[in-house]
Image (cartoon, rainbow, N blue to C red; front, top):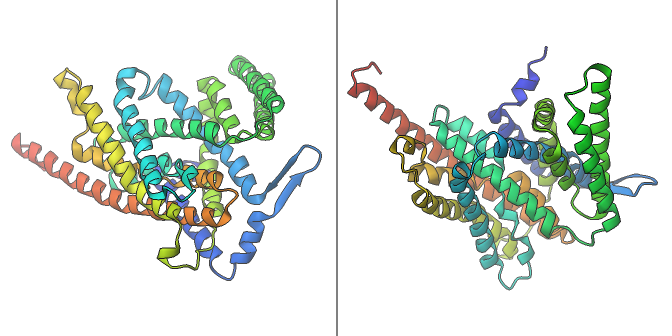
Length: 402
């Protein structure tokens, strides 16, 4: 059996492949290969007779990326039902921190772009790339206390939920209610078929799996035709399927999503020509994103999370060891500034009729996320060293060998 699936499930590997794909796309788009690559990206591939006529780039962002959002939805459901968010007590502090991490970057973006006419891009810096953030933590922060990863995971999952809601509410235009109704019926049928999964074995079980997949694709089609962003269909399917079979599907899809879907999206989204203008000629959108991702996330998550930690402090002193210190919270906040995948998608959605702004926004997302990665890596390393010294001091105090 090949070891590649487990290899591609690694958070470290996923982050490295994602970053490598984005860099490769950006480099190739600005070499002699650029015009050909951009022509391929904008080339339309249609399926006659059913109203699907998308460019290669949109097949990636509307089609392939739906698998990523399906995985996000199932992970969200798992955390809400059985994981770190399965009670108000567990979810309240990371939830408030996540809200702060959404509001403050949007405020920073609005301030920088005020009067420019580009205010519709406020959602771009509000997202956190959960896979990338966890990957950076895994690379630089092995053996750190589990509470840091737990808090980051909870915060990022809730952040993704907000991002999904933003896409559904703010990037839906001219909805076709008939197609949307058909989409709802298809999702409901997926739910019904999903309820039977696990009760049927053998050929009947295999046929049910095929039926669920077909219904999921039909749901995607109707939601796409309705004018709602098609990835919302994947989210709906992920939420309505029973958790156990959905988790099995995610386990099977994870290597494909990490090793192919996300890198292809990152490659395609980052394949933009660097504007041949001076820094002073870049639009306010560029500067707003570059500032809002690292700075807005840092301030928003730290401030909201710090206040929530004090207000909702556990009265039981034996459980306070699970509360993040201020240094740990700042580190998590910096990891939250890695926007990447969802920020790139929101950038495309916000300025899809202004390709030159999309290009600047893409570069800004890459730079802003890059700044967050570098600072977060330094903070995680410092945190790891401090934790190592503290553990050594504890062992020395009780006379244990180092």
